Length: 488
Image 1 (cartoon, rainbow, N blue to C red):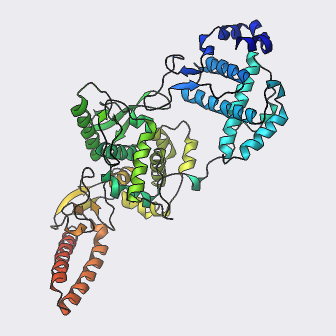
Image 2: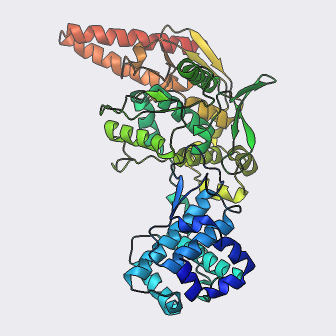
Image 3: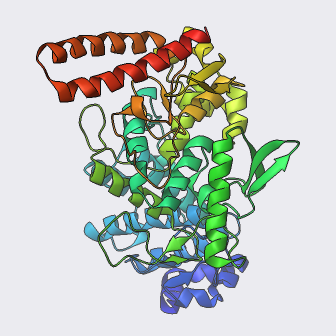
């Protein structure tokens, strides 16, 4: 390295800032510990712990890459620095493939060849634009600092990512996938179930979810709030929780952690040791450590494979944690919540983010909006009114309904989501946890008419066993209908 500096970069010895960098002992290492060597904070849920310069084949590029990381270490986050380093590694790979050994050979023709090289790969325009932005920033810094002078005019107009997501390309969770997830949620370990229910109801970023503190619940003036540190701004924030079911889930998870680790572990969720079995429903031995970023997605996608969760076109669904956040934003937009409220709730830097989520679906507009905020009285299998609910706002009501495990043709399943699958499966009428309201009355009457016709047929043909089952169904339906008619 010193021989290279003396022969090709002798001017660096005349540069005061460069002289200081040349004295840094890290230049002699090709693997840097992000926390120890650079003093940068690394989130516990991220696996990136080191910067490696080994893949940089050109000695001059390796030197300047190290200069660049050192000079920007206290300006950019470790994630941003890693992105710049990845772009430099790709450029180094290109230079090696085309036998470009000296920086003196780099000109517009080389950049044109690099452009062709990138577009010959399956990379998107947005990704390619990111590489150009990173490389132009790197070479601009080299020129400003006096390390190396390479003209970056070629990147003009290319360093800005021009590809913007279209509304129909938003990767949110469609209703049919959401329903399948709810129906099969019980197959996951209990902690993962709770993580799913919290992230889908709050829209937290995955880093915020994984790092929730054990004492994240707050009760202020009879209003439950969720306290956490934001991933983007690294500041304390709170979200209002309007679902008592969600509060109960968080409290249950808190008790689970305390039972495991006492007060020695300060996070709401933990990780586990690698399982020896191939049973994906087994969580393994819990350990007092924050779960890694990709582990949550792996659990969901194992569930997707196991339960064959598919989109409406029959393709196996691939879950990503950020889909829950995008889904919540879509639901809130469809429910008519103002952009400013969504921006505050989801902690977006700009209200322009809402443009990505405006999937104005017909079924949640007009009269459907009014139905969401009507008071409802629920009747159980005995025909008695067991519950009355007046939504405070449409978004809270929509999220409340999504807390339940099973979506039926009509009515609502009010059984606990955790621990066990539905014991009745497709026999909702006979379940004490099933609830119906006046909205369901027309469908109940249709089913009663169908059951009466089937019962008549069973009697005519002497089908005594089928007759008994149909009579039970008729009695249950009559109880529901009479109870609903009494309350008007």
